[in-house]
Image (cartoon, rainbow, N blue to C red):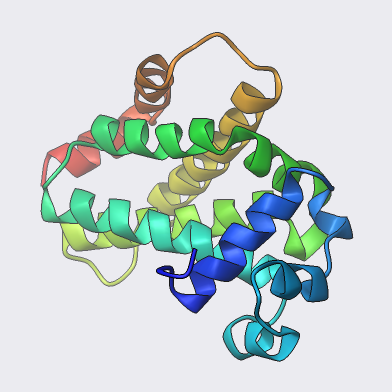
Length: 184
């Protein structure tokens, strides 16, 4: 763990602690102590544990979206990588989904950030400053649907592997979005 960045050390510590307790019961002091750092160091990097959780999510989504925008990977391939991360960290993700609420909820934060990144991808691809309301609403529907479906997939332990789930999420993209994106 010593080779990790300070932020990653906190996240790793939090992940370890979440194996034994609901995330809403874990304190900053416990997170810091578990990785040999101080609470003040934690607050130098994050405003609270929810900020740390979303930082980790944003970091991963940013990387995947960058690959997608550059054309390095197809959307379905991006979804497979995204799903593999979810499956690998299923217990941790479910703990976060079930034990965060309101504006600090993982569901709200991850859906909002995914929507933001999808907007950016579409704006870049279409060469526009802003999306029209129809496109924006369809992206909102799709982003929240992805997040909700992933939570259900993990929670219910649905017997579908990452490849099949990526296919389902890819097929669930509204045709209007697919056509709009592929025509430019």
